[in-house]
Length: 515
Image 1: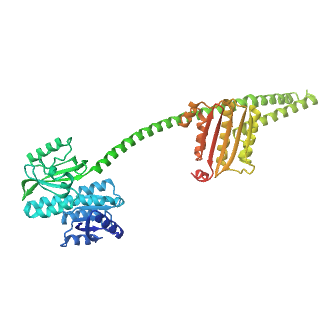
Image 2 (image 1 turned 90 degrees about the vertical axis):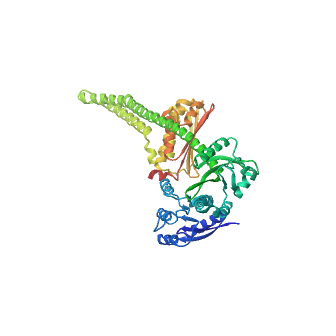
Image 3 (image 1 turned 180 degrees about the vertical axis):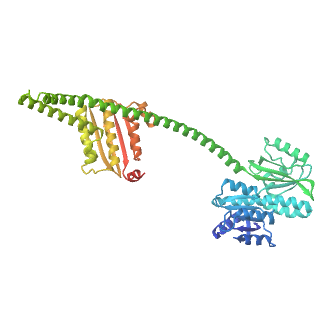
């Protein structure tokens, strides 16, 4: 049979009132709810002749707050349990509420906790009522106490001064077995053998100095012999301010709480290990990027020296020869016959043509104008043809005839990856041929460069997969260029060759450009 409780609920949402009412029924109580939404209604209800068993309150209302309601309740009904049923509160507010006398706090997102919270609150209220009633008249309150105790899920029993059990509620007798529960001392014969010495020691101290105690221990369940963790409390009973020598004991099942605490400790340990691993990976990546940045500066310096050397060794020589011819023509204008002058001018024109071609070639290798003018497909074909001519490696390029222009940043990255890939093929693979394919599928442009040489050592591939490659811009540089466009780069290699694959989503390039 369910127990009737009268509840004062401070809540402005009718839907939340219904949800709360359902949880009260789930707890095994028949609830009579008085709903209020304002401070005036709340005070009026508490000043009425109604005796409430429980107060439930939302923390935040349009014109009233839960903390103010708690202060009013502590003045008007100090013994009535007060539970906040509200949205997520900050830790500071929760602590403040409990310090100001709130019995408990239950999140509206975790209403399944309301039933246990109500049961605990009412159990604690029973304990307080029992202490007060025993001060007035213990005999008159015994029947009411037993009725309430039997309605509670907790184990409840009383003992005399010597520890003999004088009363045990139905739950205590059913849980531990009547013979075991009534066994002295203090009904704790059902405690786990490992916990019993400290339980008995705490009881001896309590019996000696009259001070109650609370402790966690394992109690044996009679029906299956299972031991479950309980929070056991002993409270010294008083009558009119004087100790009677009797004790009230309660035991609340906290097995699930202990399991949650254990799981929480394991989660914290797992999180700690994960944080350590993450910190190590961050340090490794930071070091990798530091090396990459240093390598970038070194490569830039090498490229500048290379361009300067080529300009000096080719254009410099051509321009020196051109200057000599022009000096001869200028200084010997009266002494040089027309045929000699014509030969010198023709030779100078040839030298100037070579200078123009050399400057154009150098400029094209740095950034070919054809990439901006005609797009990646034409620029790639031009570069692959030139690569075959310069390296002697047979290079084939397959691009669909309907291949369209791509966003500028995508074309630049693809061209740089193609350049770097073919440079690696030339310098490291030892292959006689290389195949390149480009295409667009499912909104993603793909580039593949496959050679048939010696491949990349497994150790270097492993370093690359961890972001620790020591190849400078040869591998990590390409990957970082592609990642900036939210793409991916993959390398497959064995002793028969290497395939580099790149994919860049075209749908995300507008947002990348905006960023």
